[in-house]
Image (cartoon, rainbow, N blue to C red; front, side, top):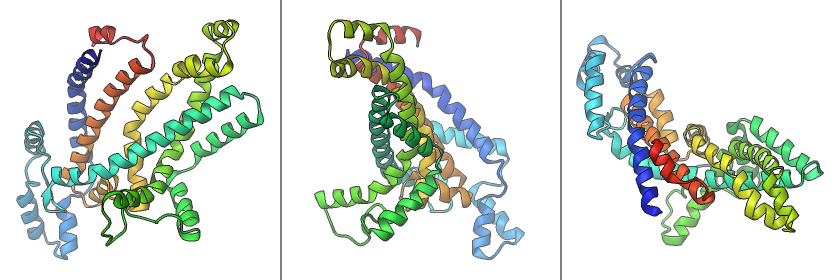
Amino acid sequence: MWSSRARYVLNRLIHGLPIIFAIVIANFFLIRLAPGDAAQVLAGEAGAASEEYMRQIRQQFGLDQPLYIQFISYMKNILMFDMGYSFRHGREVSSLIFERVGATALLMFASMVISVGVGVLLGALAAIKDRTILSNVIVIFSIVSYATPLFWVGLMLIIVFSIHLGWFPTSGIATVGSTMTGWQYALDIAHHLVLPAVTLSFFYMALYTRLMRASMLETLGLDFIKTARAKGLSDRKIVSRHALRNAILPVLTMAGVQVSSMLGGSVIIESVFGWPGLGLLAFESLFARDLNLLLGIFFLSSILVVVTNAIVDVVYTIVDPRIELKGKLAHG
């Protein structure tokens, strides 16, 4: 079974390669539609924005080459997993990305666990207690959460829990100047992670709550649930053994799709909380016109989406054994 799952994941990754390269090509040309380049930014910061100075900068970084030559050079580098050089930081793009990817992965993982876990729980409760006060409260909460901007939620959490109550730090991933190690350092990171993770999960938690409630209500009305009730099974066993496992499948599908949008949302959250991840790095590189760094982040994001969707399909077979990988492998 595990070997077939490994083959399926490998098969999906191979089929995902054309998608990744299509995204890479589209990003390369779309991002150059934005006005300005790194030469203008660097010249402005140096206070020497003469044509001669800007021409030297463009020549130094290859920005004076025709677009098609820049594209060919970029694609050759990508095939060698060389994402280029960051003008802003004076370092290789790959080293900058891998230095920050851990912080973003931690934030996304924590947010996904919170949003899916709480969303599934609230959605299931709203369906089981349908047409009750509890169900109405959960539905209203999900609607309000869905409509609330994430940056506003983050600012309000900082004001309440950081400034007024002093429970959590306002920014950063760890205490500045701290010499903590081991579990103390891990707990310090977890302490800094709470507010950003809760903020990022707020929107998605509402989405999963509504999706889980609708899926659960539909599942509870199916014939096999009526048969289980007729056999005398308790409501708890019906929900835990039958209804929940079937109703959660759409949530897993949406969770896989939402990985890319969650990475986009992390740009806002990391900027609000000063979280040193890829989102904040992308935000800074956009204003600095550091296109190589921005393209490198997009490239890594496209790989992440393809890999995550392959993993979600495998999780499907674990949650619902009726779904077999053999048929999927046969159809690619």
